[in-house]
Image (cartoon, rainbow, N blue to C red; front, side, top):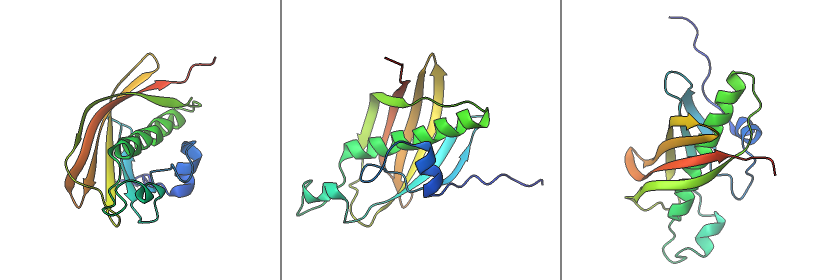
Length: 155
């Protein structure tokens, strides 16, 4: 078998792909990705008790907000989109989360959990991309959703 390209990305690579910064950057590492035949990516988010949202979101029983789980999946999809565009030598515009469908939350996310973010591109049409994603903790689904992101148009 021939030499395979490295499909892991560290935090510096992620910072070069996303505009998000602390405290709102929700992808710590890319474990692997593929661009063909179906673009998909597996990322990692370590959940620490020091996350700012735990101070006000059930402080006596800290739980990561579901909307942030969706945001983490969307950020992972953003990295995937950037990787696709860079692979063909194109500058990638910013994409914004515009719609969420079929969101499900099946397990509480607590400090100390390590989240595996899995996203897959379903289709891209006229500046819109549709993805499906899931968040896993120790191999068990904690959240899933389908979501759409739209290319930012110049104003």
